[in-house]
Image 1 (cartoon, helix red, strand yellow):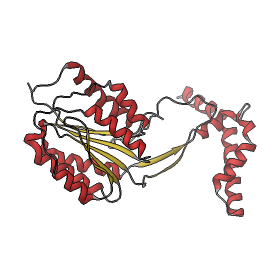
Image 2: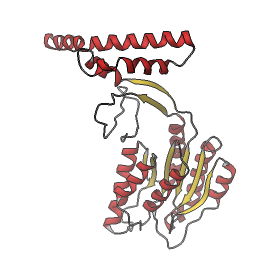
Image 3: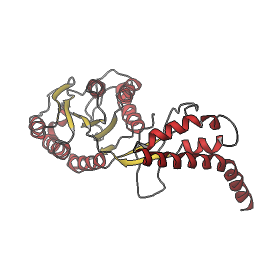
Image 4: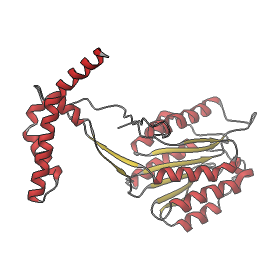
Amino acid sequence: MTTLTTAMRARSNLLVPGLLMSCVVAAAATFLADHYHAPVMLFALLLGMAMNFLSVDGKCKPGIEFTAREVLRVSPATAPMQIALLVDTSQAIDNFLIDFRNGVQKFIKRMAGKNEIMLMGFGERPTQLVDFTRDGARLEKAMGSVFARQGSGTYLLEAIIDASRALRRHKAARPHIVVVAARGPEFSEHHHTNVVDAVREAGATLHTLMLQRRSGAAATNDREEQELQLTVDDGTRLSGGRRDDILTTMAIGDRMEALASELENQYQITYARPPQLIPPKTVEVSTKRTDVTVRAKQWP
């Protein structure tokens, strides 16, 4: 206990000068903003530039760097989303077509209107069924016309790359890729790192809802299966997406509703860091609450 207290006191003594200086700058910026009716951030930047020499060396440096890492703002994410909805249209959905249609239509009904949604099938080759639109009726009609392409497998990895490119062309501000698949044989010839890189370059979040194969069900060769599995593992984890592996298609509707609820309740975290530090390769967001699950992008 004594050792811990001593360490805390030493840490506090190290940070206090910089913390006090940061408080002075914040108070001065707030006063000037009220007096001149201008943005607080403007005066904070101007004062920060004038006092920047204190962060280079001396007693104030540790405390200033500590405050610079702090979270500046946490607020609900209210900007419209751009969602690439990828739906399995291979032979694998033939026995589950109604469940697939109804489950995806629930998601569309919940998310369309305020958000833009593109609908793409990936049985045989990726095919855009509806371009980005807020028209829920058009999307539901298109989904109601989806059918299983007999004798076809899936090209999911290729579809994810195509969707990522479409989001980039659309200049999506809040891009998401949502995959609903029955796990038929995969025929894409892409390496998983290329697929995940495409998602990252689009700034998108990848979410997957996949029906697990029955025991003994036929699959494609080991390499394509491994690339698909690695894409789902790394893509959802690194992009901060939701991954659902289901045993029955009757769960599609409920899981799609749960995903829609998550997307509608996202938060935007604004944080700062000293510009002279080495840029981070990954970002971690966590919570101390045991009843809360946090999902966030791990790449900056």
